[in-house]
Image (cartoon, rainbow over all chains, first blue to last red; front, side, top):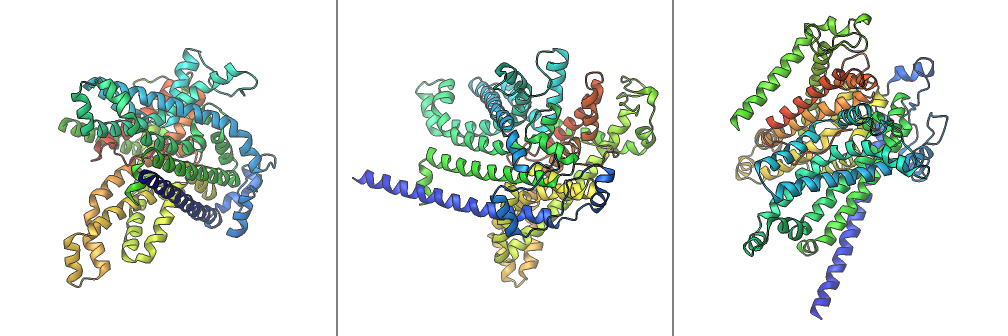
Amino acid sequence: MLSMGKDFCYRQRMAAKILRKILSSFITLLVLSLVVWALVRFLPADRAALIAGDTVVGPTGLVIEERGWLQWISDVIHLDLGTSTFGGESVSTLVWQRMGAASALMISSVIVALVIALVVTAVALISPSRFTRGIANSLSSLSMCLPSFVIAMALTCLFALHLGLLPSGGYVPPREDFIGFARSLVLPALSLGFTHSGLYIRALMQAYDRQLSKVYMLQARAEGEGRAALVLQHSWRAVLPELVTLVCQSVPTMLVSSAALESVFSYPGLGSLTVAAIARRDSATITALVLLGAVTGVITSTLADIVQGLCDRRHGHEDG
Amino acid sequence: MKMGRCLTWVVLALLLLFALSSFLTVEAASALHLDDRLLHPSMQHPFGTDSLGRDLSARCAGALLNSVICALSVTLSSTGLAMVIAFLGLYTKYLDGPLMRLCDAMKALPSTLLAVLMMVVMGPGLLSITAALAAVFTPQCARAIRGRARAVMKEGYVEASMAMGLGRAHVISHTVLPHCQGVMLTQALFIFSSSILAEAGLSFIGAGLPADVPSLGGILNEARGVMHQAWWMLFFPSMILLVLTWALHSASPAGLGSSWRRKDI
């Protein structure tokens, strides 16, 4: 009876917490839309380019925003994000067309980053030595200090130009040719995954180090469990929320902010849309992408919080 | 450990010297020699030449100098702005909530795209890149300084100065903020190295410095077209980027600390 009551309380508290979280992210979204609108509306625009316009640099998409915030936000909610200069197509169609390729890249890069990070951390933790720790440290520093497009170009040089194993760019839709699709995805996913894996490795190492120094780990060790069992069996549950947060943080970045990398591989994702929009100074498209990234970010961070709450039941009791 | 520290500073000093050497080689960096296109590295051209016959080492030095100037102005403006925000938030309770909401909203925006949007609206140039990157880095810096400052506010000596009748503004600016030095220094180093990477990324996709100003990202973008025949165009600028950011990270007190957020494009 008592335990049922407790459970009920827990659920209620969880529900309240989730509701509060959703409400607060809604407010963040509102403030955020105000910021974006103000940026486009009030930043000193490059008048020279506006006046020179299509006679000097070709068609430019730079428009001075004249709608008020309420009008603008209602248009945005109705997915009316304006017209791009790419043959006058609407921005939302343009973004939608590239969603498939973009999410394929995002998903495969998350997988690559996770695999690299998990393998490296597991090796460094199960057989700890200066050598394995050193490898984990330098891999993560390397991936943090090099921009993704440098890694992308280095990989292209090696695998596409010298060895000729993989295509150096382009994209094949999976419905046409699945093998070609997979082959065109390997290099972009490897480089994007590697750039994010550094962060994963560092955070995972820290989380595991915190766990492994706890008393219950010492107890397990004293009972004769090997290091592998500690890492693989006993502490992964405690590290899982950390991992979920990391992945949720990198999803929006991978989705919209891989412009340089995609332009190296001429991959038709949202990043190369950004690059094309920069060349035409098409502010409507970039605004739409900023909003898309922000909304994805808010959704994933809300999800991460909810998952964290569900993983660790103590959270519900702590602030109650 | 001490050896490593020393080495880091030596590397940073060498890079600075290399950047300053660009004042001596302005001509080599811009003079076109169409006969000398894509020459291999040699004694005369230590880094080789680019696709218009310009000396790559001179261009890299100029680009490095531009990066450093850019990163310096971003660092100064964003830490300054963050200090002002933290001060205002501590001074009046009414501003604290809205300012922090604003910072959270800015942090939730995709950072690189925010910079790209501002660059597209304002046009390329040093001033716009400083504004764009400052908008990206200020929020988290303000949050960090505010967090430390709020902890300092609870200390006994702050209470003592308040009790002595010093004004709130005076106490905050003379007692509280100076105690946040450590956080500021860490943040400044982090912003400096991240803005070097961010500037390279923005210039690479054409939303950074104008095309006629040498920048590491711009050189790498040129390298993309010729990388199958000219490895040096790719190798030297990326090595400079790697060594510089690595040295900056090992120089910072927290190392590659947990405050790291991926700012790359």
